[in-house]
Length: 111
Image (cartoon, rainbow, N blue to C red):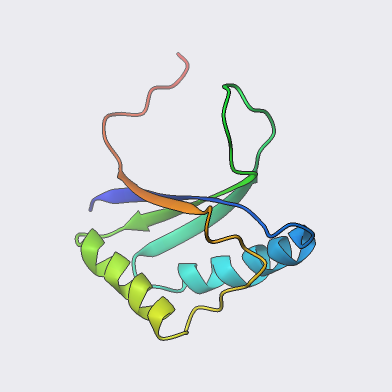
């Protein structure tokens, strides 16, 4: 079965970082993992910037396993449009990006 990673880089509304983190960790991740095809989710906080330019302070990676990625994404969009996913106004959606990557190539590890 094909495997994908959905990578979401996000920002919080200034002055509301604690509220944003509480909602993201304790509400949002669980709601998305409950959707068909999304098997896990994990958040990351920026530790170091290695190149010039803007970088999101937070990232979430969702692992998706499905034979029909479009159906999974349509399900996610449908849940959001029908307000079955609780969104917080503490997330700055104007700067948030989301991209889905298909696993490609073999994992390379230390010998």
